[in-house]
Length: 243
Image 1 (spheres, rainbow, N blue to C red):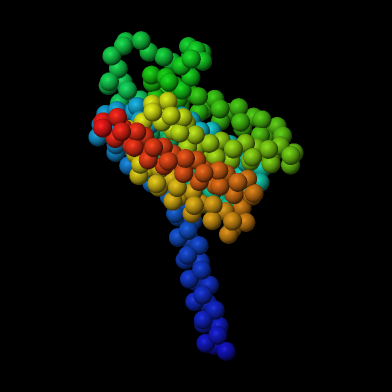
Image 2 (image 1 turned 30 degrees about the vertical axis):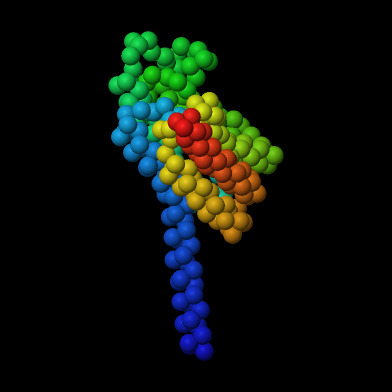
């Protein structure tokens, strides 16, 4: 009897340890893909291969996810992951602004206060991005607390958050298409995106997370595959041109 109880306790401890490890991977695993891209930008002093709109998509998605959590408390792990991802995207934007400021030839600068939609998310100062994030957070907070008792609104908020997150790779996909090249984009970043998205989607299914998260993970995997196909296609095209 004692042996059975002891074995059961060991299994529970092992499962708890495994669950804790999976939670840590969920929180910090999303940051890992941006490490090689950060290093690539630092090494080349060039931001052209990386779409900063990836940062926009993730900032919007994770700010909305935090307010979704307020309306519907799901795993605390996913809330912490959102905070960590917001800080990571701000770090990426800070680096891009610093590099662009160093490389800038023209003295003309663009700021959020110009209210020029042609230069939306192409501002010259990091502070402009902070102002936008602050304004979006305040607006989201106001609307959320206004309709917090509406289950329909909370579910719609969650769907909107994961819809933004599902589009994570889309800006990079479009920039690669526009450049007809994946030069300057870290392939390691995309591979880590894919590995993370597969793990994340599995985690959502196992933990019976809201359906929105599972759909989001599936869409992200498909976009990751499309970007990897671009890497193959454009590298083949370059080899053909060089003969």
